[in-house]
Length: 251
Image (tube, rainbow, N blue to C red; front, top):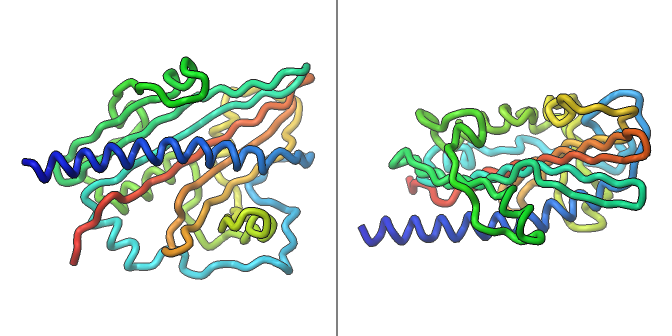
């Protein structure tokens, strides 16, 4: 019982730490995509990347990594969606969703919390989240899924492509920040999901990518950003998804 309590405490600390780190990551990536490029239609690819100076990864996710995820005992899922509005001398950011969930595959239990209201009422710092169900947060269930299957289903659910090789390495961001970002070439449904029920005059820019970990061949998190103009305002909607394994079964 003591060991189980210790594991749960570690997982909770891990989830809170990731949630705090994600805010920094979200803020940085949004700042990086401030440059607006007019386009006639939505596209998830960055057409301004110099293909001659890019590199395409091969076999992004190794079988070893898949096995580790499949044998996971615990995982932390983070989903952040926010809207930034600029115009008329104003700059406003609203968190539409900010969810962190700790899933225990062994016990088939989870602790899922919604932090977007807590952030709205705490001057940008994470307050106490509201506990909700996993299905309410992600519109799906993890029952019957292992860590790898959950990873795949969440990516699809959010509208990101699972073709991890149909991408272009973002050389510019790597030179500036050292990040290993890969921009999707093809269309991703996540942009359509972000624009669902939105009214706009023109799409200015969009970008869908993932960050690759430095030590493992595994997308660390996925991000999508789309900017559009509505009257005198420029509105940017962003979504970030991360699925992190806390522990895996040793073979």
